[in-house]
Length: 385
Ligand SMILES: NC(=O)C1=CN([C@@H]2O[C@H](COP(=O)(O)OP(=O)(O)OC[C@H]3O[C@@H](n4cnc5c(N)ncnc54)[C@H](OP(=O)(O)O)[C@@H]3O)[C@@H](O)[C@H]2O)C=CC1
Ligand SMILES: O=C1OC[C@@H](O)[C@H](O)[C@H]1O
Image (cartoon, rainbow, N blue to C red; front, side, top):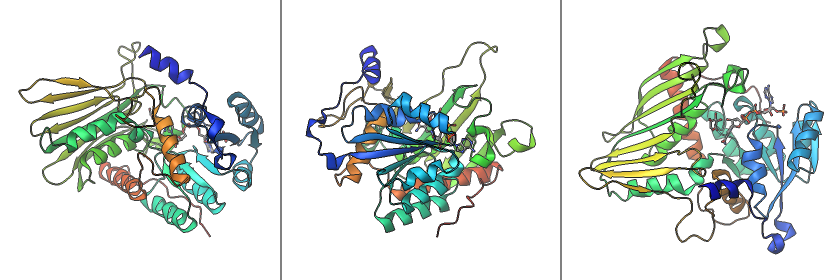
């Protein structure tokens, strides 16, 4: 584990000798966001085709500093910065790490400008917006990928392979949780606490739990059986911003699913931080398979397979068996980058998240909000023409 952690922070230089300059892709990042170093900057260090070309931030100084710190050649600042980056003819790919409510507008604008888009999760505020994005991408022959990085890692794929092998019989129940200690994923004032920006627990950790359930059952829910959420605070602006969410979904064929998320889990006795809950568990007719750390398994994870009355075994999966590509120290984001670039360059990626998958994930997040009474998130006012 220590070796893996060391390699994640100190990866070997890419073997760039063989890369045709024509195959280089200039990445332009919208927003000097917290996630950009992990999702783009670090993976780019070992991907020979990816060039950290530009970053755009509303504040010019911040853009400049971010570019300098992370090795982007260019920065755009000011109120027109995002559009300026999109208009730069050297940019091939736009990474959209803006608040959720801005995903639609800036992805549509990037597509209009002829750029491929790596779009942060959750794709949009509504399923209808996600559908519009993919319709435009198809018309323009451009690639858009919702950055559900965990799906690209061997760990969750191994769990799915165990489930699909029917070694444990048919699925009966699947559950997923994702929690974050107070002040970590969502500190005070964070975009996740802002309704207008698309905040909330169902949107943030919730989108992973819904995605994991849909992925492992290879199906969509048929109904939200129950959903309950707790608002971030009693202030009027938080009445539609959930911090805790429980939901039970039906997947038909007697399969049910539970999700639990908490973006603001307080410390024990106000001092001892709690371990984040990071499990996905599939109960089948003849046993259970569980993955600890399905969200960022690259750092550490374990898969426990417990056949009823049989011997429990533990597995781990940091690479794909027999595959040419992948290293034990590749993060979820690095696997994702490999697939995204493969897709743009006309190769078949090891994993892909199809447009309908993204649209359906948004559809069921919306259905959960409807059931728990928090209501829908605001649709974007941007009109594409
Ligand atoms: N894949 C993953 O593992 C993760 C994905 N995410 C996703 O990435 C996106 C960004 O999250 P995160 O990096 O945590 O967020 P940050 O708050 O760090 O970044 C959001 C960026 O949005 C820009 N922005 C534009 N308008 C506003 C506004 N009105 N208020 C606040 N920010 C604004 C800011 O850019 P500027 O620099 O121009 O000021 C800021 O850099 C979200 O969609 C989130 O769900 C987040 C964390 C992990
Ligand atoms: O994408 C994410 O991954 C982990 C979460 O804790 C975080 O809030 C989220 O944005």
